[in-house]
Image (cartoon, rainbow, N blue to C red; front, side):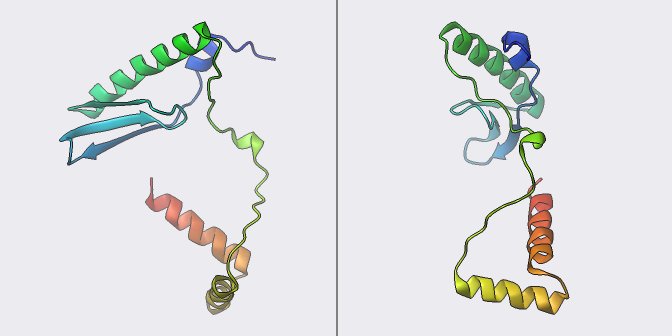
Length: 121
């Protein structure tokens, strides 16, 4: 088992999001897994540097205070099965669209989700 020390946490592939904010007139950056961890800057590079400093500080402070440190999701923890509940009307519409597309409901849902995920990246 890997010892969870400073280096362990620093090497984890945390999810970084950097977006332009018209309201703030700067780039805003955050580390998804670490709540309340946001910074800004005039360039993406500046934000990324600020986030690196923030994660070092977050990990150090959390370890010093024996606090839990969230870790990124790991693909090995997932099996590919999702229980999905919806209304009967939406289920009917899904079945109808899947049939029109010549696909199973599962395939139709999976392809629709894949398209949406690709658009959001």
